[in-house]
Image 1 (tube, helix red, strand yellow):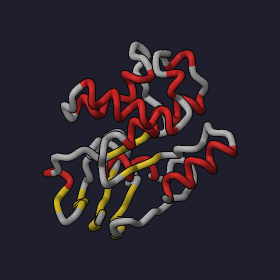
Image 2: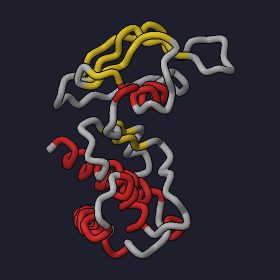
Image 3: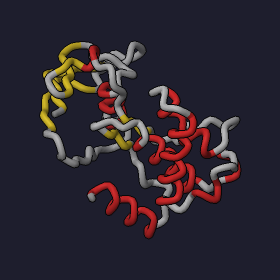
Length: 175
């Protein structure tokens, strides 16, 4: 369960609160969408949940544990793919497994299985510059899945995808 308890946030260079006194609960297994105009704080909520930002006031909990004390990572896929240009697609995909200190052999196996599942296996030795925007977005999605987190934060995950791929990924997530 994810809980926001009276969370307020403003950036240090701003006089205005981006988020003010926000409270909500999301139960395990829930799938929600946060919808709003540009600049209203949607991405900031994700940055708060993933501890990239700290609330000015209030608390955020996952399974009744303050996120400040969490040891396991949150699976966060930002709007921009953030693939490392000097790493191959396979190496980029393995990144969360490396952080978790999974053996290279096991990491490669897990990553290759998902690359195959998402029709990207043949690109595993390519670099991000060689892929389309939609392909990079799918790689970023796979990398987020490989965090193994119970909480996945997907910030506009399908914006660069064609309609068929978008539908396929949406169905896969909901399964």
